[in-house]
Length: 102
Image (tube, rainbow, N blue to C red; front, top):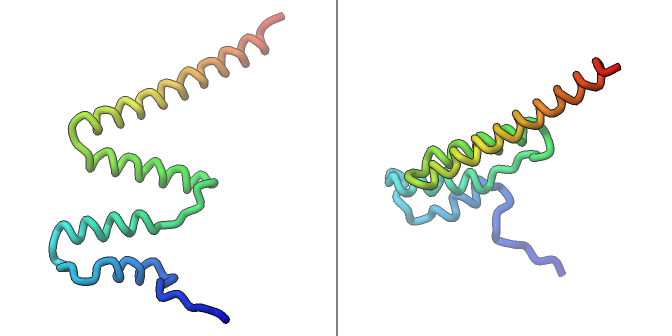
């Protein structure tokens, strides 16, 4: 005996179901809709495009925040860039010393 679920498979229908009874012109409802759309968005995170879109989502979220949370997101981004810079520098030094050492 097969049972059918009343939960829709289409993400846009699920979002519409969650917004029943809310005023579509209300700014809070629009913000909630945007939040739900971000939550239901499915992208491959194992590709370069997926990683870049995740970084873009992080930057957008950090810009929406204020105060110390925005500052902490900025510090995190600087630390990541610092780590990439140190790693690139170490790789460059290793390659140069390997090539030019007798």
